[in-house]
Image 1 (cartoon, rainbow, N blue to C red):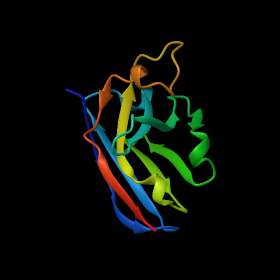
Image 2: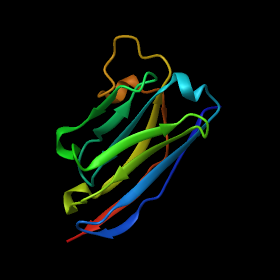
Image 3: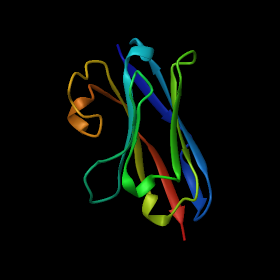
Length: 125
């Protein structure tokens, strides 16, 4: 059974940093695309960043230059380094995995078969 477990969320002041981790098990991590999404209260879940199995990286425009996705296949873990955080970054952050991507976009929620339970990130002003 595929499991994704996020960690590293918390409360931080504006301008601060956090590093989220997502530990994966139960599937071939190195051949899966991994993504980060977030959902703020009352809003839809939205794309943040993704990395394909060939290390092609995508970012949402709102986070470019501030957030960095990376992966360690030896540890079956994907990371999201978050710098220069803003209050509008406050949300629950979810990790997702896609084994069968094909021609689908990594920016779309529907591409991902597996999801973690999320970790809360709160940025105070």
